[in-house]
Length: 433
Image 1 (cartoon, one colour):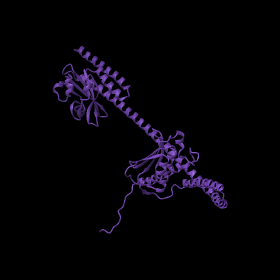
Image 2: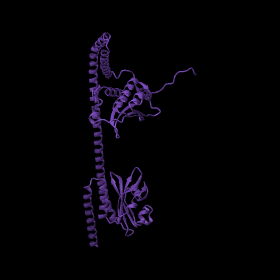
Image 3: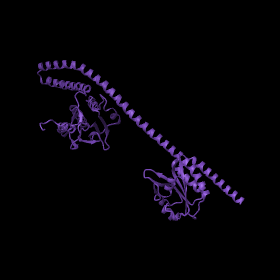
Image 4: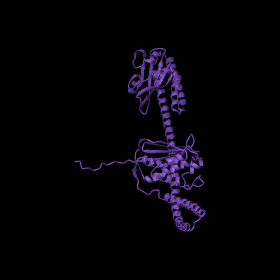
């Protein structure tokens, strides 16, 4: 009798030692999925079971599902689930204590699929963390009924208690890693936003400085231009020969070109003149397209309209928007001296209006695209480099953006984005009672 007691103590001590050793290996894992697999694997090595599953609580679906299993066909695992408060895991969670099922064939709490797999006895123990059941370790015997006794139950509970701690640690580490990754993404996104904002501020300062310089230059140039105009008129009145008249015409044309540059310099300084009003942006665009339609046709450029029937109103200074549209159309035409296709498309997304001006020209080099909206930057021999800079400033002053990109099939596309105007239309007064 005493020998049997010693044997029992020896077996129990050996089992506890095996559980402790298994715990050390499980504790070394900080990955939740790997820890779950180790809990099941080490349970099979240290506890008397033929098969087993570890149920976890799936809050979104409010069901108990199998996280890992041992010696259960994989194609059956997904079907072994219980609604809350049902089956073996439901009973264990509700009572927060182990459950022994001596004959699985006669207990409705055991899942039918488990019974069809030849399970005869069931032992389920809770994994408890901070007073709450976070999982249920379920051992199956396919050898006999009444396979599990009180001693096995105690060993299984010891194993489950330490496994619960390791699983909680792995879960917390996983959450910490996820939080760190989320923080890193937020920092990267914030850094990107700050860089964009910094670039916008630098551009705005550059535009403001150039604008002040442009206004000063324009006023300085205007004075001698007025004198030149007067003397050209006097000389023209005295010269009668056709040759001299032709030369004077050339001088007058070049003078007009200088005057145009000066006027654009002044425009650069005063893009904000005018009060914003709700306008029909499609009608504003169509007025420009009607103006240039014949000119584009003569230069071999097909104008393709991809415009909706209507768009929400935009708060804008209409003449300034016409200036932007005309600039972009003429810029596209100059990119296609041998003819091509200019496609103008518009759409409404969320609270923004998008208008694309897409040409089939040669597109833009990366260096050109990076500086194309800067004042006085131009790739044309006779260009002033102010048209796109002024357009960019006008759109920015309307709380919008003007960007450029190369098209995959060739050519460039300039995209204007403007905020939708949220207005309340008030009814008019009438004489009705």
